[in-house]
Amino acid sequence: MSVFIQVVLPVLLIFGAGYLIQKMARLDIKSVSTIALYIMLPCLVFKTFYNAELNSEYLMMLVFSILLLAAILLINKVAAKIKGYDTSMESGLILSTAFMNSGNYGAPIILFAFGDEGFVYSVSFLVLQAIIMNFFGVYYAAKGTSGLKMAVISVLKMPPTYAVLIALVMNLGSITMPENLMSSVNLLADATIPMVMVVLGMQLAGISVKSMEWTKVSYASIVRLVASPIIAFALTLVLPMSDLMASVLIVSAAMPSAATTTIYAVQFNAKPELVSSITLMTTLFSVVTIPILLTIFI
Image (cartoon, rainbow, N blue to C red; front, side, top):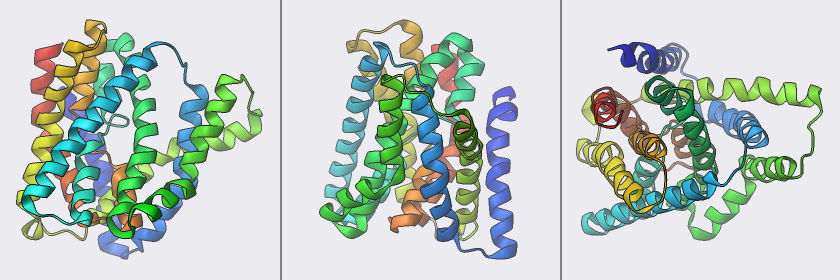
């Protein structure tokens, strides 16, 4: 119950704020998501990588992240082939299952469960997930409606892509950002996660529970909340890492769908209603699955 009150409830309240404002004001969701994607998210990405302490453990986490992503992509492609889903539907399911909410949801849970030492691993994993999501998330969101060539072009047009590159160059080159400019970046970065959650709540305002595609939502929820931590557990058995690091990665892999993918889905029209539905349901279901997982690995 304490996990729910301290972590999950605040997230749901932000969803609720977006839901209520959309019900009352009927705002243009795509305009709001564009502001978050093109202005606020690049600042968060830059801040994350500019301040990151890049060390040898990043290599092991990178291998883990790539293998986990590859496994989930394979599951979705096999499922799409069996079910006969088109590219847009496949992309929507990939957005919903391949990218987890390891930031505003996962990081606080890791801190609560494993303390400061585990939180360090969580932040490192969050940085790597940000790289993966900013590239592959945009790629699959655009691919669903625009094709392969336009998907690659869309990735290259995304400000977060260049924010990553610039931040890494400055980090590795020990280039100091002017304090006044960094203050502006920090202001926008700190507001990004709440804005993303509000956009998700706005999107949910247009969804009826009766209209949810329950078969697809159930499938995606199982992949995100059950299959993903099982795959993560298998990977920690074959990859050399400490027990604490392994536990943090397994729990992080079990987080609900990332809210940022809703922005990508809205921006590129990659089944936004389905992606939002899955994000909502995995967040709700995680209230049950996360505590169970924590009792096993703490």
